[in-house]
Image (tube, rainbow, N blue to C red; front, side, top):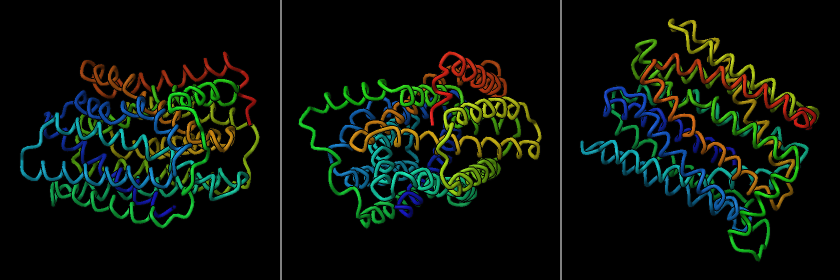
Length: 388
């Protein structure tokens, strides 16, 4: 399970920076074009995740992971061929990004839910954090390797390597014993399962609160993921290798955060309050980071953002599973993917804003809004502060 997740996220992180660099080359460094490609990847998650979550609770989760990773391998090899032959266009990258996002919607809920079949619930947070530490290690290795490889073998060469890594992910997943049988034998239609999952999430203050908080974070906290290449070119005038190092630094922080969380014996009290505090600090750090104009000065902020964002994601995913019954965990994780798919709702406005006032100013507003909106949520929804 760990090996399959590791190589899957390695491929995703290498693909992310390579796709972003290809778009910059095709569109003359347009931040709005970067956001548009992110939209093509993340928007399908909003529409496909409910279906994927319902299927994750009624079909073998292992099979869904294998299917999605095989599709990602094929799509990545196709874009590599288009790039190699010199006929790749902006719209082709958009279309393949849409397919990749749809496949990711099927991959993530099933992959995360399988963890609850492997470890007991009391160790679930540690298992999720350890699994995410592998993901964050790829955030250190993947962008740096991809950034340097682009200089020597071009974006098409990196796409071919990424396609091969996805194939290895499929082979690793085949070896997993868990996730071979459905979690439930629902006799409802997929639509009925989706409706039941949404009602289940809304029925409990803890489940509803974590969904709202993850949506807030997606809208205002993750905008920098899509705009970071444009910010790096605009504020620091870096090349692909410099961008890879910046993302690697953030990955180091993320790895530290998840390993620290994985080492905690049993964090079972006031997790809601802890999430709120971390998210406010995240927003402040993002706002300050956006105004840096010196490469060295960005390092502590990138490390802090990496730590906080990784702890936030690990705790959020843990709460989504521990607050849900086993037969509902696939659907709960799919709702989390839906909130992540809402990223275009903020990425597009912040991308347009970046075109008008500059990427640093746009990211500053994004970070400030994250802290302000979370503080308002903490006051208006006090029940979440008491969620364990």
